Length: 307
Image (cartoon, rainbow, N blue to C red):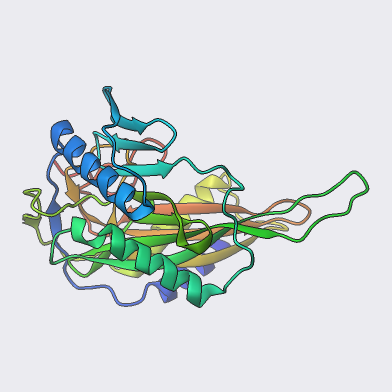
């Protein structure tokens, strides 16, 4: 490989942290639209209670890929049949109940954790699994006039992202759960994109293969970058910055079905170019020699496919 790829592989390897010698491949229960609708209806009821709005029978529309439940003027909920993912969004205008000031990370994280507890999100997962707070996001806005005078930024919403942990490993992909709050802790939205739910019948261990070593996985990631740059032997005026390299399970998008949770290495690499916006690449490669989950087109791995 080119020198820049070798350097990138070494940097990624150093970021991998502790990787278990073996890892379980976990069978997932195949979602049933009826069960998803029941879960979604319960979540809608919980959201109504937490938000302090009257429970009403929602308008239910079921299509091939999703079920929606709407309480006009109150909320809209969606359940995805392929994955079991759910989301509920309350009818708040973008600048309704904005924060008067930013209380700081510690207070916002505590507020989000309290709301997550009231919603009972962790209780939706199997008892042996965990839901860990991962990141705080802020949505801010500012205005300006024709003269170019710009107002100070206002904190509109605080969003907490949570990560599902099973068999001691995080499940990467979209956030496993999110809670969005307006001022005074008013609930704006909630989503749950976990692949496992309590008493869903999944969780059987289908295999316990040896983990792939970080150096081999990092080399594959670096090879993907080389191909992305047209197999160039040298990158001029381009800087590759590895941001993180993690080992864990991988959940596909909420519109995709998935039979098992299998381990992957996931790398985030930024590409800095002078006088151009930086771009980012997120690359997943198998965490075992056999590939138990086929990635969607455009995200394929070079590992041999396993039936």
